[in-house]
Length: 107
Image (cartoon, rainbow, N blue to C red; front, side, top):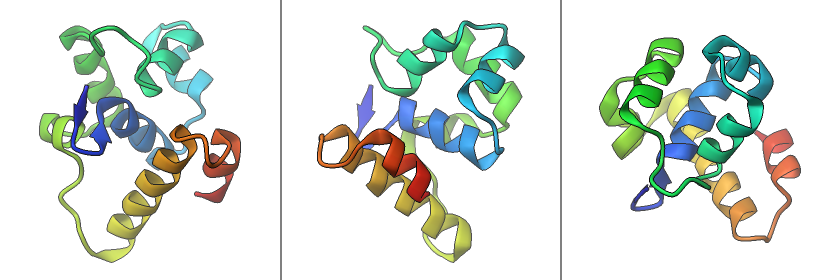
């Protein structure tokens, strides 16, 4: 489920981090098993999250639909820099050039 270099999984992961939540904390709030959230955040599902799963995530994390599908529209300022850096680090980690744990720690 990729729209350019922005993915729904990356959007969910970024929103979760913006709220200061660990994966298990968000999974608990949603009533999901942590592995389900991990598969969605890492884009390892056959069709991406269902509309119901997106609705649950949207309720919990508060982003609008377009943000999940198209990415943030905040190009400047601290939030824009944070989102851009997060996107760069996670894409580098996914390419295998950087460990995901290091990328997460660098954010």
